Structure formats: C-alpha cells, structure tokens
Image (cartoon, rainbow, N blue to C red; front, side):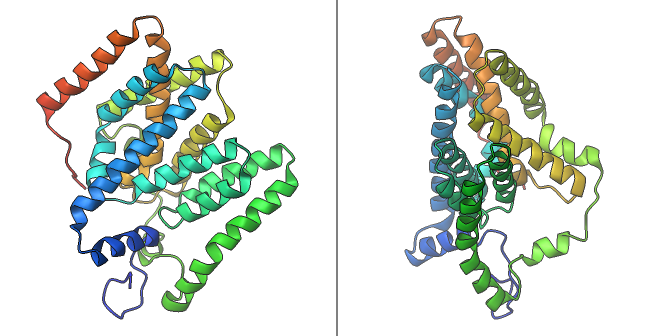
Length: 299
C-alpha cells in the first residue's frame, strides 16, 4: 500500500516505482537486500557505459575513458555507500542519463517519457525536464516542445490520478512534512554536495579542470552540457530552498563530478602508454580496497 501503517492511506514513499520493483522481488520470494544490491550494481554498470558513451562524444579514447571512469567511480566513497544502501537513486541516475542520450539523438518524445518515469524515483527529474524545455525554447523548436510536454503529461497523469484517489495527494507525506523545515544554512548544503569528504572536494576541482580542457578543445557536446547543467541547477535549487539533504540526494551531482574528472584524467592519459594508465588504475583501486576495506552504508 506504500503507507506507514496498513490501511492508513498516507503516501509513505518518495519512490513508488522503486516500491513496485520491490514488490516483484517479494512476490518471487527472493532475498530483498541481496537482489537490490545486485540491481544497483547492474545500474552502476549501465551508468558507466552511458558515461563512457558521452566521453567518446568529447573525442576521448574509449579504453582510456573506461579506465578513468572506473577509477573515478571507485574512488568516490559516497557513490559506493549509496549503492550498497539499497536506494532508488542508482536507477534514477541511469534513467536520467538515458534521457540525456535520447535527447541528444533528437528523440525528444522518448527523452521526455523516460524523464517523466524517473520522476517516480526522484523528483529531481523535473530539473532535467526543465533543462530540455529551455534547450528547445532557445533553439526555437516549439512544435517539439509542445509534443514533449504532451508526452510528459500523458506519462504522469495516470499514476497521479491513482495517487490522488488513494492518498488524496501525489506528494509523499515526507516531502510535505519537510517542506516546513527549510532554509538551512547555505554552507551546510554546499558542503553536503561538494565536500562531504575530501575525495569529493578534490573531484570538484578535477571536474572543473576536465570541463575547461574539453571546452578549450571545442569538444564539449550538448549532452554533456545538459548533464552538467542539471547537476549544477539541482545544487542551486537545494541551496536556495535549504531543505535537509541526505547523501543519496547528491547522486547525479556526484556522477557529474566523476564524468568531468574522468575527462581530466583521460586528457592526460593521451600522453602516455595506455597499458600504463590502465595498470595504474587497477593497482590504485586494489591498493585502496586492501587498505580501506569496502565502503558500507552509513545513512
């Protein structure tokens, strides 16, 4: 019933689509915790492959980009904790990247549909939809904008009606409750996104350097601009509203940092033998794993 208490019809999940996936796991009598972690691992692989595709569009070498992306994903401790925590954001991030790639291929309607489906995993998909809409407006593609809006509305209207009928609202109770607890200090929000630990703070700098280098080479594609723009706009909106920010809210922003940092590393790896860079990545990951141990869910 997606409720806190049985037959008390108050919407108790911010990710109803992920809840539906969980019901399939339960119906098949499979271990929920193991299946969810495996699912998130698969989503992470899909995310790396899509980021790899976007790296190639910047002119980066495929294998060098794969090595750099794998290393950056491994080094990012928050991403590891989110994945093993069994949250819905891995699936949300994968769908968001898929929508960006579809939009790049001028499949505007499908991009809008995928993005709208992602809303039922995380509400931040509205930001990406907004980025798509602004792009279509600036390019004066008004007919495509109208079609995209219609496709988006058609996607969400059915689930919204069901939610309103059963729960009298399509907004989860936790969102309504937290809407009164806002205006937290700006520094607290920025720290949660940009410096929850030292690795992320460093990645902010390497990401900026990677994007700058790519722009200097005139290789930054529209799809990458959409991804980085969505990540930055999400940060800005959270900073302005000032709600409580949990680590999994920052997933897409962290992936943008991974992407930009991978571009930075890949740009330097062009100057040396590929085997050397791959070896350094593997040795670095193995050493860190041996010294630090696996990341665990802390929130």
